[in-house]
Image 1 (cartoon, helix red, strand yellow):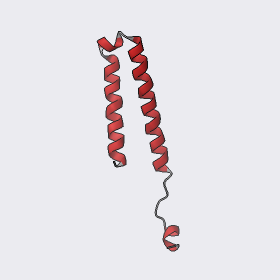
Image 2 (cartoon, rainbow, N blue to C red):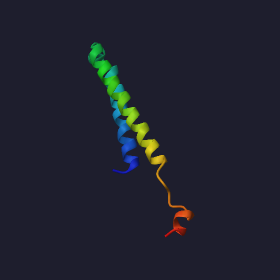
Image 3 (cartoon, helix red, strand yellow):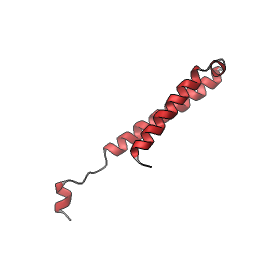
Image 4 (spheres, helix red, strand yellow):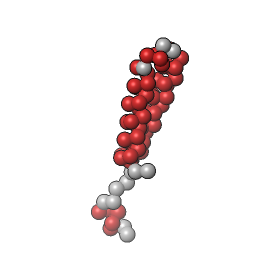
Length: 68
């Protein structure tokens, strides 16, 4: 899966979780809201970790080309 589709899918999932938490049936249950919020926070942390990992990947620079 490429990075753009991962970012897009995580964004869609977080948007759906936000909508679910504001639903009247779900919002009546504090346990459900807490569980959804915990999952949403975990998903955000995963997303941030993925961004950090891809930002630190080595790129093909002139230094790397000279060693080949």
